[in-house]
Each structure stands twice: as C-alpha cells, then as structure tokens.
Amino acid sequence: MTGTSATGTAETTAPKNNAAVGNSAASRDKAYFLHPYTNLHLHETQGPLIVERGDGVRVYDDSGKEYIEGLASLWCVSLGWGEERLVEAATRQMRKLPTYHVFGHKSHEPGIDLAERLIKLAPVPMSKVFFANSGSEANDTVIKLIWYYNNALGRPEKKKILSRVKAYHGVTVATASLTGLPNNHRDFDLPIARILHADCPHHYRFAEPGETEEDFATRLAESLEAQILAEGPDTIAAMFAEPVMGAGGVIVPPATYFPKIQAVLKKYDILLVADEVICGFGRTGNFWGSQTMGMQPDILSCAKQLSSGYLPISAVLVNEKVYQACVDESKKIGTFGHGYTYSAHPVAAAVAIETLKIYEERDTVGHVRAVSPLFQRRLTALAEHPLVGEARGVGLIGAIELVADKTTKAPFEPVGRAGATLNALAQENGLILRAMGDSVALCPPLIIGEEDINTMFDRLTAALDAAVPVLRG
Image 1 (spheres, rainbow, N blue to C red):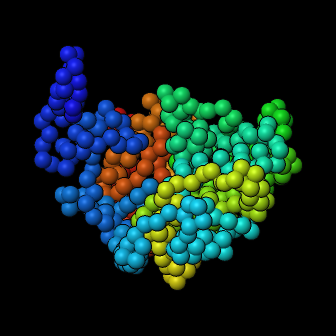
Image 2: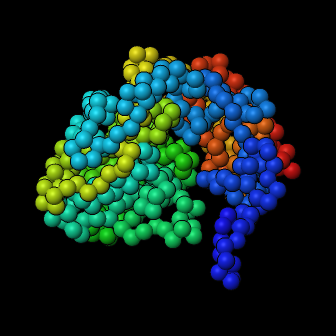
C-alpha cells in the first residue's frame, strides 16, 4: 500500500496482518479477503473452508472432503453443480454478444426472451419485467418504484413501506432497513425513515397459549390494521412479504395468514410485494411461493434460482397499474431515471433462459412434489430430538429451532451458540447448512433424490446427537 508520511513523502506500508502471508489459499484469504456475513475477528484465526469443485448436490473442499450442500449455496443452486447446459448457454452467448446494455432504447434477444418467459410464468397477471443483478438490487428497485408510482398518482405522502420482524429483503441501505433482523441494522445506522415492521407470523414463537393458527392469523391481521390506522392509511404505500421467510429462520406463515393480510392491504389501497428471491422457481412445491401461500402480489421480485445461481441476475415484475404510472411519470420527467449497467446482462439472461427451459423439460416442480414428502417426514421427525423445539418447512425448504427447554421453549444461552455449534458439527460430518441464530436451515438443490435426502438427514441427526454433550455439558 502506498501512503504519505508526516513529512509529505510517499511511503510503502504492508496491509495490516499481511506481513507474513503464506502461499496457501486459506492464508491468502485471511490476508486479503473481506467476507460478508462472517465474524471478521474469528475469521482471522479460524480462516475459511475452501470449496474447490461441485458435482450434483455435493461440493468438495481443497483436501478432497465431500459435503452435501444442504443450503444449495445460499438457497440458489437449484440444478446442482455441473449442469453442462448452463455452461454451454453461457459459452454460446459469450461468443455471440458477451455484454451489452439496455439503456436508451437499446435491447437484445436474451433480455427480451427472458422478460417474455417470466411474464408468461407469473403467478398473477403482470405487465413488464425490470432486470437487476441480485435480490437486494431487485428489492431496492421496488422501493424506488413504489415511491415513483405514488408521486405519479399525486400522493406524495403515501410513501411508508411495511415489512415484518424477522423478514429478509436484502442488504442495501434501503433493503437492509426492510430486513427485520437486528444485526442488519446495528451500527449501520439503520433502518432509514419510512420503513415500518409488522408482527412476525411465527406461530411457535409468538402465538398465545392455546391460540390456533387461524386465530393467530386473525390477530396478526387485526394488529396490521391497527398499525396502518395509527400511521395513517394515506401514508402507507406497500407491504413486502416473503411467502416463506427465509433468512429469518424459514418461517412458514400460519393457515389463512395471507388471505387475511391481503384483505387489510386492499382495504387501504396498499400494494403487496412478493419477495420470491428464495421461494420462486419450485422451492415450495409450486413454481412460485405466492401460489403455495395464496398471495396475489402487485409487484414480484425474484433472483437466485432464476439462473440456478450460475450467474448473478434478478428480476422485478410489475402489474399494469404500476407500469402505467411509471410511463406517465417518465413522460413528465423525460426519462425513467433508474437502471444498472448490467441489467439484463446477455450472458446472465441466456443462462436464466436455459434454466427455465430445464425446469419445464424436466418437470422440476413435479420432482419437488415427488420427493418433498420424504424431506418433510424426515424434517418433522427431528422435532422428537431432545435439542429441537420446532421443525418447520414446506416443499424442499425447512429449519429446526434448537432450544434448551422443549416445554418452555427457552433458548440456550448465549443465543446463537447452539445454532453455531450444530452448524460446525454438521460441517464436520459432511453437511453444509446455515445457522440463523438458533434456527438451522435446510434448502438443498431441487434435483436432490430420495437417497441423498436420507443421507442428508442422517448426517444432520448425527450432528444433533454430537451436539447434546457439547450444549448440555
């Protein structure tokens, strides 16, 4: 690194902790790489797991050890590793048109084709597709569209946006504000203004004693309406909701929740945004989580499994009323002043198109429906384990929540230790998961078969058994 000394002369200094960097990948990682969602202090001593290659539902580290990737590499590698059709689609497009933009009336076939396919696949009638590069970017775009939409309609005060406690909608300044997880706010000076959080729909944690799922859903809808009335309905623009809350702990909404919530939103002319970043493309047993949960969104965001995670791409689908308001406002201003250099990147779009073709040709949703009963049976059975308070899920996504006392639901102290312990033991046992506090999530590639489902749960059970003396000792 080059800097300036107190005398004003240039000097060269070594980066902190980099003076004696070894040649191994792990040592170079610790020296140069700033990791997301990582305890940076711990990483300086612990270092990374170096993943070298993947095949099907498995990945292999640099020592050759095999792991079942039980989270599909952050919820996204639906088709597993080594899908040659996606490699070939990227290669063909790289040779033909490796990059181009879609600003100022420019376009290209992959972007057009992908937009058309998504509109035809939408769970409710949609009008247009806007492309971005990640779920965070997609949801950040949605926030701007919501504000733009209400300005176009002459409603400058109708700008507040509802999210939910434990929701996850991204990590940009705006989307991290929507995210209802404290560690995404702490010391980042978040959330920003005009972002509100409604109740978390987690029956196990927040229902009153003896309260049914339906009664709990009714109470949440009543609470939402009270919150809207307290804020002023003319100030509330939209509500974001994941069909199943992912990074907040795989929280499946209680029965009748979304119909009751949507009735409240409709009453006060509040848009519903379905965040399908994790749930879309077959994860819940339908092509969209909105179909599984009975949602009828005005705007839908998606990413991750759109390209099976092979290349970064995300999309925002808007209905006709939102689109027409944007048309009117862009006419008044002279442009729609929003976009990304890599929106609808032709290579990423080509890979996403091929991914959607594979889903259709191989009936991926049908496969999920065929194997998910076994997945859910094995998951539900874990509720009997002495460390597990709740096992919850739908389709090929689920989580277990670890508790110190199954009767009182009291967590282990400090909160998060149990989840981290199980996560580490599962990895030692050849299973990669993700701990979110003391909930540990499973979300394997959609191509997983019954034999690998059983192997995955056998490894998880062994890790749970190994965690008992560690946590109880």
